[in-house]
Image (cartoon, rainbow over the protein chains, first blue to last red):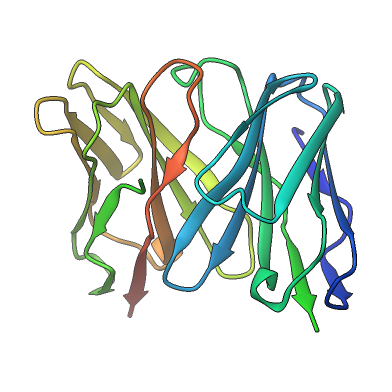
Length: 114
Length: 110
């Protein structure tokens, strides 16, 4: 059974804290993605990675950074958490070619910044 | 830029049909469709490639009009289990980012 696992389902952090969200996939996928999901706004891409140590900005990268040191692991970093980063964060992985199949999503991390 | 989905929400009685549309201002390489049930992760339904093919999955099918950069998802004889939020995801190239629309909330009632 294929899996994308996010380290936490719920997190509560204080404004200004550095926050790490971890994601691990066991499908040997080349691509990994971080999205945030907010009511009425759908899924918005923060960053994606197409290979180890390679990354590209998505549509809303401001305030975030990422790290991919190993193929199976993709981390999202909030350098200084702010209340407007309270959201559901979803990690996903897929094969390299967008024609080869869909993305598999983790269960999500609901982050609350207070 | 996110693809545009319509309608935003639809309520159906069991057995009725629905169509969800997705349009993009960019030339697309592929269109993906996902369903997300409340409290769960989005689940991949199907992918359509440029070339205008139509795909089917049980009573759920989809088409892709390459000229208009539009895709439609067809749900026929809807079942209660079809309830959820449907997202289209679009890609402009083989290794490009996957961008999602704002979603269409579908509710099927008895």
